[in-house]
Length: 401
Ligand SMILES: Cc1ncc(COP(=O)(O)O)c(C=O)c1O
Image (cartoon, rainbow, N blue to C red; front, side, top):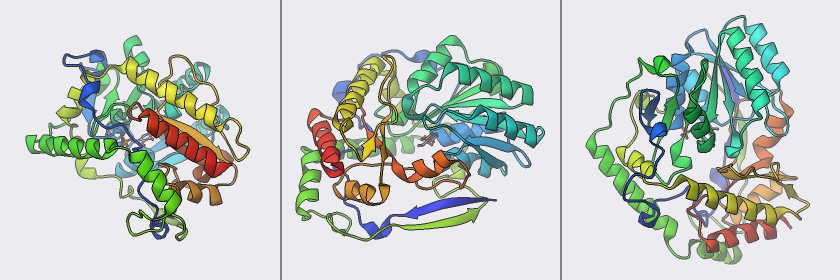
């Protein structure tokens, strides 16, 4: 049983965002012959699912997480990071992090010691695509090994961190999970990587072909919506005139969201148990194989730097990661608001595509508590046009000035 913060935005009637949060497929971006990444997509150390959450479910199961066992998860998390543990009938405890979301090693150690062998897995995300410090990861692995737990590196935001690990050979005691649809322009995807012997019993069932057709239709619809020109301008016009309202709302006014706390021991509504043990779309793998990963990474870095420039002089918000390693492929641009209550609403009403982890388990980590409402995730993916990026960055700078 755990207590979760819950935020219901329904009364806000926020307008439809003016640009897509995730990349959509564009035929022109794809190579006709496979462009690489085959070690990451095929072989005995790889298993495909439809989302990262189901890959994580498989990783937890392979780590012995079940009734009576415990997962250690970071205090700053989204629900799909802890849902799989609840689905397995296990519990979870949260460890704290510093302001850069680096795990507090002393807390992890204390939780492992106190659990007396019940902790079977420790989940550590590379948030926003930014790799956790290698020295911290090495110490976490040593702690996990000495306490009989598996270190699960959550690469859902960090395709390139997963790529480096897989190419080097996944270490003993480690499993990796990924969420390719956040990086590639595909409709679904969740990947589990590990030493082949640990994955031996896992054989995800293939999806029926009618699901592939549904995936193709969804890709087509999403692609058209994402590139309907000029989407960003449409969003900007809505925000300025308040005329083009969506989902029955008012772009300039509207209600406030409702905050509550809910107690439950079952996974959230975002988790579908019937998708456990089921493979992802072949179409998604086809797209992954034909994508030039370096080109994607470069576009993301360029957009991230454009965001940095746009917010560098703002007093009301700051970038918690103001530099980017040359080999980093960022997932989103994190922006920390000084005063989230008015700022979040103002940005949403301006049509800015904002993600925020407002639903998460209660913990005593002050960073998790603060970031829940004040840390925004803003898109910087390769599918954004120059026009969309200009609109996004200038709208955010204007709203927060
Ligand atoms: C850090 C992290 N881990 C895991 C997940 C779950 O991934 P998926 O959406 O593919 O189930 C998410 C989802 O947003 C995430 O942000």
